[in-house]
Image 1 (cartoon, rainbow, N blue to C red):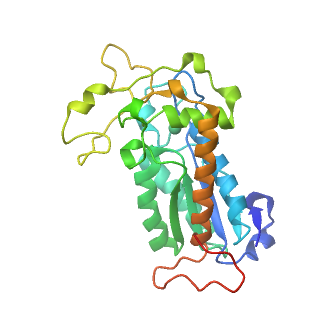
Image 2: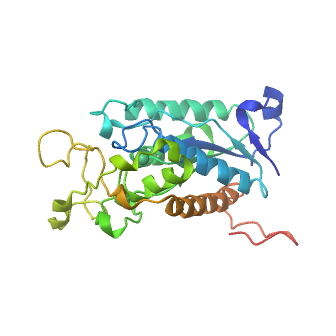
Length: 274
Ligand SMILES: [Zn+2]
């Protein structure tokens, strides 16, 4: 069982990989994250969680770590300088090309480790596209889920911590404190949304939004939707370690998952599967 870095291998090395090797693709973004976080926030979190999870999972299965996909679908932040984004159709085409060319080799398992909520729906579409078009077994893992996709949002955020808020800021204080400026962190929660009954984050009716939609006055607002002010590095450490642990356990299952059969019985002496 081994962890390899795909781009450090040779062509013949890659040709010799097992079909059950899990290729891990970190999926981040380059987009505004308010005045207190760098535009690489999602990229850095995706890489950290994917790297940690790949290393831990590789004690039990073969994992090859692909270089992360940095530019993705961030049109909800297109209003801000610093957001470098692909359209939905471009990103789907890029994912299709990556899957097609990966499938030209022996590896048949591809797992996305996503750290940007704006990618989630499209990555879900790509799972089936890559399955049907190129025969890959495909998986979507999240470094963390934003509040509009079933994730937790701490109480100061009223369930609306979807961008640049408490948890994301804490994760960055743990991973790259040199890139965080807490003096510029401001609470920006669109509390008026709580008065709607059916439509909202985590409610039955979703809505299309951009991150400059929520500002009540003139201008686009801070770009934050959440409350980063209470973030600490210790909270971030706990969150990131938990995310790595969850993703490692999931990657391990990705190595043997097949939809037409139960998990294989574990050999004597192997630790319990998650
Ligand atoms: Zn983010």
